[in-house]
Length: 199
Image (cartoon, rainbow, N blue to C red; front, top):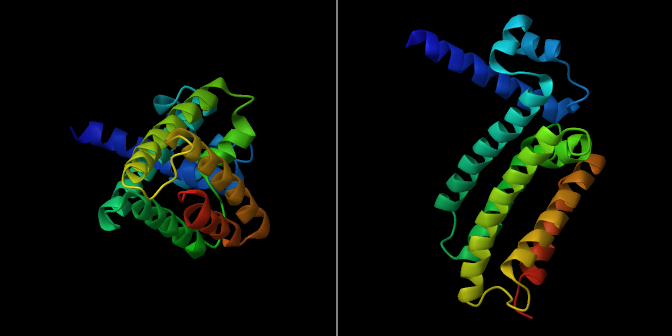
């Protein structure tokens, strides 16, 4: 049991280290040796857990998504009960997190999509699955908000969610360029104060 626990710990350490380095330096800017050195793991043992760097990249995306889902659930649990207000609260908390980070790394999903979606089918499919999961959760809240009259109904919840995702990811890219959370804050304010509201 101790051996299994150690193996799981080592794998988790590699994933967390990869997540941090990929967020700061990008996938192509980070080598396996750099990951294992930062994780304190012998390079040869990396391949006991992952078939390749590409496979590792896909696992890091899933690891990031799992952590984000936990954070998402935590924010919803502590936020307002009204669906639209709950969504806004969650994104306000995300903005606060980015404000506290010295390095404006943006969203790992968006970073990976820009860097790897064309060159890695493993990463592209994993990204697609993760985004699909996010979309389902977001849509479910928008549908509840449409039902209670706080969100417009001339567009479907799916259309609204897709537009928000596209705007949010674009704002995260601008955040990285400008090293400021002003673009993401402006995005959230425009979406929740105007775009989502009944016309």
